Amino acid sequence: MTDEQQKEKRPLSMTRRYRRGLVIVGLLCMLATLAAATLLFQRSYTGRVDAYLGQVCDSVAAGYKAQTSHDAATLADLLPENDAALRFTLIDGDGTVLFDSEAGADLAALPSHADRPEVIAALADGSASVTRESQTMQEETHYYARRIDTPDGVQVLRVGEDVATLWGLSADTLPLLCCAVVLILLATAVLAWWLTLRLVQPINHLAENLDTIEADVPYEELIPLARTIQTDRKLREDNETMRREFTANVSHELKTPLTSISGYAELIETGMAKSADVPTFAARIHKEAQRMIALVSDILQLSELDSTQASQSREKPVEVAPVDLAALIKETAQNMTVNARKAYVTLQYNVQPATVQGSKDLLTELATNLCDNAIRYNQPGGHVELRCGTGPDGPWLQVEDNGIGIPQDSQARVFERFYRVDKSRSKATGGTGLGLAIVKHIALLHHARIDLQSQVGSGTTIKVSFPKA
Image (tube, rainbow, N blue to C red; front, side, top):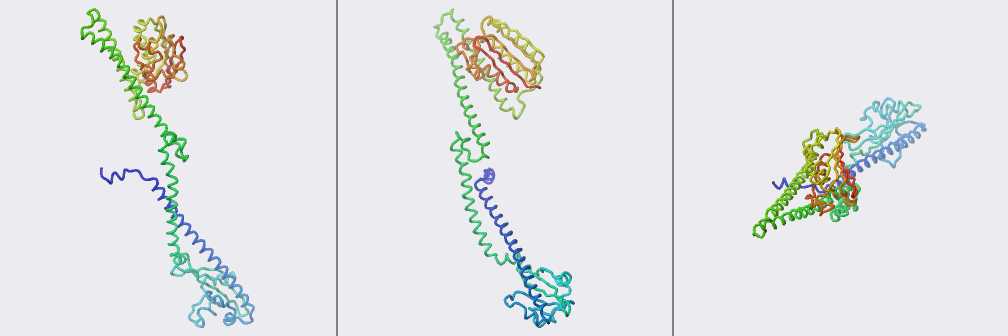
């Protein structure tokens, strides 16, 4: 993998993205604010110019109309002397220019103003205000025209002033705008650095307190992430604890029969065992070996069920097919009859039609383990009954016995691996301590629910309820 590919795979820095985003937002807001402020200023300024031109024009027109003579000389005497930026023009009704404050005496060079919009509108409506842009787009000329009715005829007085446009104002203030942009960018960068430091620092501190991460979440949006991290961490710790316990239990369970096998084998090998005792020792070796085989078989099955359950979200956990629970119960009862007779336990079954979508092999293992436990932890003369049927919530399978029962404080743990309520009885009966753990995993793979009811001395009932098909 090249360095460029490694750089591409590296995660982006949240701090840099926050800072870059804040700087960009600040720059855009600044530009939008400057543009809006300039536009509003230009509009406000031009509005005041139009109002001022109207006031000046109306005032001069009123004074001019009150005079006895109405010519260029009379108008010139009435013009204000303190505002040289204003251009006054007196236009006859036919469009001839009678006076122009900028043209002076050279009026003949001025064309007729009969086609000017402000003149036409003033003659028609009495007054008009018109804005005309220049070719350079840097300035625009504002005109206000007033019609004057004199004894000599109709005349129009027009007042004009050149005003800088938005582009002109921007060009004039460009150095100032550049300085403002630089200053604001610097301020935005400093503010972005400070804000991102305040935002990211609490997130970095979360890694220092994983035990209390959910209680120390600085932002509401991080609560789901904190919960996920805490749940995952607890799950990993629980799995590690289970692994250690499982390893310790397996080691202990294997050590016991191996020690016994090694001891009897050594007695036979060294000749210390009498000839009459050899068959007895060999039988004990065979029994312990069978116990080890059963233990290893259960461990392998549990491992396989764990792998299947882990991949359940990606692929089908088992080969699903319709399974007749009634036939399965009958078959299980027949297979376990010999074990029941050896323990002097009566084995019965009571079945009703019931069908489950699942694996017949796994469900047979489930029923067999439940039945074996009911026989193993029973009393001579006791009874075990297997049942199945279909209820409102779906099909179910049940195993009931009148054996020794399970204490209340142990009922929540009997499905754990290697957990035994009575260790001495388990060793005497040859149990591996994995039967109910296998039952639990098979039920999980079939999305079934296990209900346990037990009372010491009265017996135990375990019911497995399957979802509706």
